[in-house]
Image 1: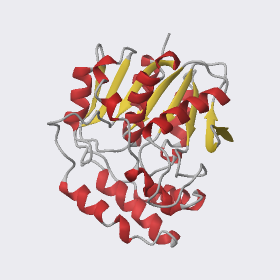
Image 2: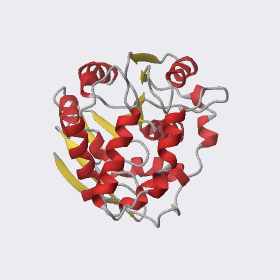
Image 3: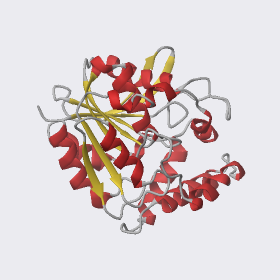
Length: 278
């Protein structure tokens, strides 16, 4: 894998790539308040080994990308969607398959409508268009994130502990929680972040609503992947996307939560590789 800091529209975005640049490109966009490392190295390599050029990157305010004053992000979801196109530009990629998880899936929906000419397909993982009437997150998630403001982000151990517990709360009962691995990734998350306190800025970002109301207009091949025990974006959201996006396919992960669990990697990689073929 190769790490690379690119500059797009005046901001620094940290990226990494896996595989052969001559292969079809798959751009991975991670969810809110976490960096690209949660697209784990082995997961990325599994896709690359199937003949795809995989790129992941740190969204603004995460990892080694540009950061802003905590509580005051100076950008919108449209800006974040445009960042993804800036990444493709810097890698010399005209069109790509876009894979987004959670907030990254929200951005992927925006990209598919805002930058249709750059998109070969979309994969929407554990995400939503947040249409009226869909069920809210579970109370345990609300209670957990209500404590986020009490975390001392200058204390690396406290920040990493919060990250560890977040993934525990978001997991499904059908998947074993690998505490050791998640603890190590959480420590890496905090240690490589320019400003850990800024990661919470994603909760203050606005925009994108006009695009999310047009999900039914998405006309590229769409794959929806969703766990049946997702506590923050319940399974009904993924089911809804599969119903409103024309000709989309739904991969249901029984017992999975809001997670990229290694137990599901083989099924997910098979589905993504098949979806991005041709």
